[in-house]
Structures are given as C-alpha cells and as structure tokens.
Length: 168
Image (cartoon, rainbow, N blue to C red; front, top):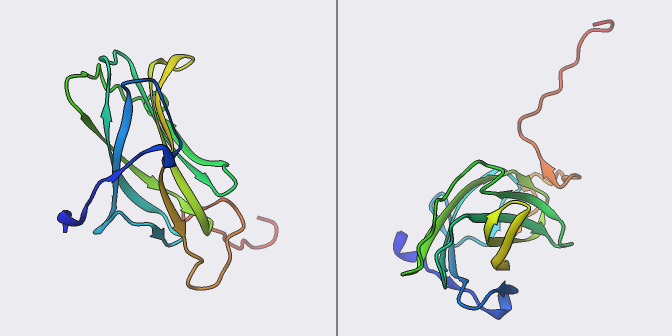
C-alpha cells in the first residue's frame, strides 16, 4: 500500500545543480498501484511524481520543468509550467514544500531513461536557475512481450490504417 511509497533522497549522485539554500531534496513515484516503479512495459503509462523542495527565499514566479531523457541523453518528453499554462503562484520559503506532477507518458522504446526536474525563478526566457536535478529518477522500459520491436522513440497507440478500394 501507500506505506511502501518511500522517498528517495537526492544528492550529488543525482547530478544536481543548485544555488545555495535551494534544492529538490527527495522524490517518489507511483503508477497505478505500484510504488517507486523502476520498470515499465512499452505502453502509455500515467505516473505521479512528488518532489520535496526547499527554498532559501520565496520564489515569486516559479517555473518548474519535467523531462524524460533516453540513454543517449536525448530529451524524449518535456514540459514546464509555462508551456502547459500552469501558474503555481508565489512559493513561500518557511518550510519544505511538496510538488506533485502527474503525466501520461507515451509508449517509449525499450531502454533506460531518467527523469530530470528543474525549478527556476522568473518567466521563460528571463529566468534564473534555482535547482535542477538531472537524474532525479531512473527507470527501464522492457522489450515488448509480443516480440514486435518499436523503431521510433515514441510508439503511438492512437493510430489506424485502413485499406481503401483503389481510386478512393
């Protein structure tokens, strides 16, 4: 159950870049009834990630980003609060805060992936880095059970192909 949803403490092994006093201290992930999963099937999956952040000072215009990179360090999924039109509002600095990110990942090609998180202050194009964790969570996408390989980075499940009669 939820008691198994333990926090993973982040440190220098997680490739952190931060200003003094700012940090994404720990994270945890769940998907369906699985807590802190590290392996997924090559199918669309919804994940919920919580991250605990600490701030040296209040952040007036938080810009939060989430990305998934493949084993070649290529970004395959990315969004931030600006491009999904989410305004978090000013973040206070008195105590640690928890942000929750819920995202439906597309069917990814089998391989190893990592999740990157970032918190900046300001608007896109005029912001300053507060804390980025480049290896916040790692996971593996298993080969498909049916043995049919995927050739693209992302496999879509919302496609159809229909044979029409000649001349249509």
